[in-house]
Length: 129
Length: 363
Image 1 (cartoon, one colour):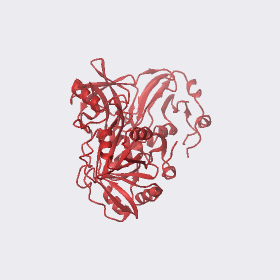
Image 2 (image 1 turned 180 degrees about the vertical axis):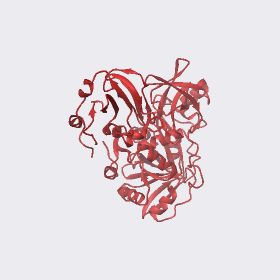
Image 3 (image 1 turned 90 degrees about the vertical axis):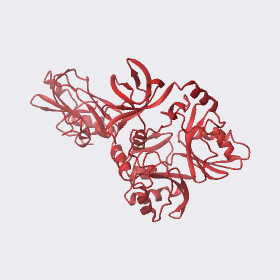
Image 4 (image 1 turned 60 degrees about the vertical axis):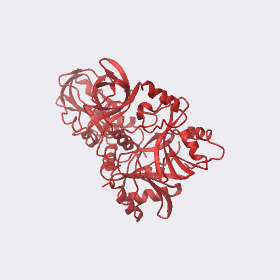
């Protein structure tokens, strides 16, 4: 599983990238692989105020629905408007075109509190088959 | 957990495996959506070795089956098969199954994996003394080749012309020198075959099909394909808790004959079936799921039994038991799913109307 070294992670398999004081958030390669083909994405609204750990988005696969949690508290500044028509972008490019939303953290410390890549990798089950 | 003779083949292909009916089965290989589309447009092969086969023979076999099954057995011609239900005395559905007729006194039943043991005991306990019964499930491999290009694929894989068969017709034909039962049936709505043959040849048949470009498809695609056709899945639409009257709306049930559970089914139909299985078309790709409540004007009026995106339609669909007066096509309902109220309209089945299953030739 691909776990880029320049990102931070959550125990619920979101990733976050800090850029200009804003966090871009998506789900990890592990998460998209577990969910398999995504068929539906519900996005948060720009301007929504969210708390760390809030359910802010939903992704569905053929088989199941799964909540996406805010990695930190703050205000939603942007959402990936391509996803409702192309949920498969998350499967194809989870760390790039498959980003889900951007959030401006309430405090700068919130990014540092997220999980480091090597620690996230340890949370993952051993590689399948 | 039980493994089919193709378990190693699935592992080698990197299939995602999961338990189904007591078996470790492939859910997907490359992906459910791709496998679904490959089946609708080309041809795919499904490992269905987990399903059960029973052989029945003897002068009393027809009468025994007539008493056990909801469909008319006497009117099945040799070389044809017919779908129907196995019921308890109270009409509860023990299984849905297909009855094959080889001749006046020889039959095969094809049953679901999860219900096989119970079916076998139930059937054996209701046979007359002269009827021979054998559970041939272990010795029998089953592969489903499904899709409009199935015939071409089979002829290329086995280097022999396939017999001309009507829908729900079958023939005993050697393939690669092996005695094989070729049935023009399936669970996808597409033109195709169900193949029954000796279990020790499963890998050879599988490899022959993959070698000519037939893609493997897993139970994930099998489920979305059957859902688009409105076909019931035992354990979801059909259970011991209901008679088949609401799911079948009288089809596959011959009330002119005497069969186990028949009185209960007749009573329910005469009294007006209270809940009917209905097709629901949602408004977006967001899916309703099994056990979600169906709502009308704030009132619960039913329950979803299966739901997902219909990949061929680009919109979510569901099967649901709905209070009979609201089960008419066009009725506006809603499904309560994970805290959301999703608008849904009762729709005629099948949801997907382009299936090739009944065409003279697939392609």
